[in-house]
Length: 206
Image 1 (cartoon, rainbow, N blue to C red):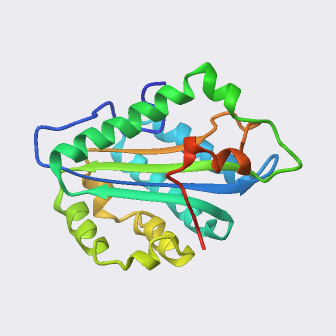
Image 2 (cartoon, helix red, strand yellow):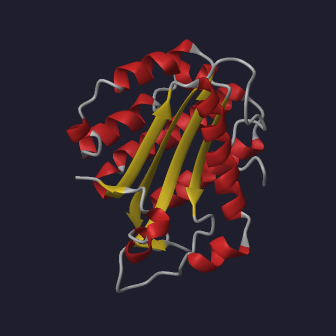
Image 3 (tube, one colour):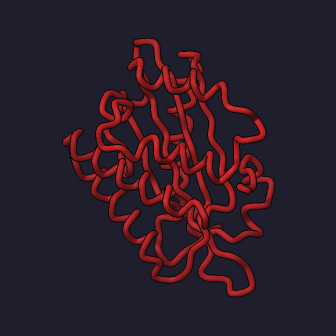
């Protein structure tokens, strides 16, 4: 499952690159049709070698996630225009997530439904690109006011930036990851869990 949710196996590049990632925790429930559809999209991305098809699938996943922003209670997004850092960040995100989903610990630390707490699944998008389209958008993103970083409107706008099937960013990127965790549909992260030190990088969406 080393390629789960990935366009390809590439983790780095010899050319100058930029990096962007966003991760959102969405409240959920058993047999949640949104989660089911997103996980089917991840599987289809993983099994395809057709970049056009992968882009369409990933765009659809981002569109669905944007529409679920009203249920997104925690989020983080990060980026860098520094090439050396971009390459290491992308590799760290991809390898870290894939290592976790293939570990026994991930299955043990996620939970079956806990009625006394809110249940969540997490959607992650990460992109490594040598193309000017991502760099240009990130330079625009740098102008965003810090007070708007985690508003629902801002988070929705970010997901929607990748929801366009015609987006040059996805079509021209070196590699991209779109994944839903926990992988098991019967497991969730609890609100209590997402407020622990292991997830302290997440910020409340307001």
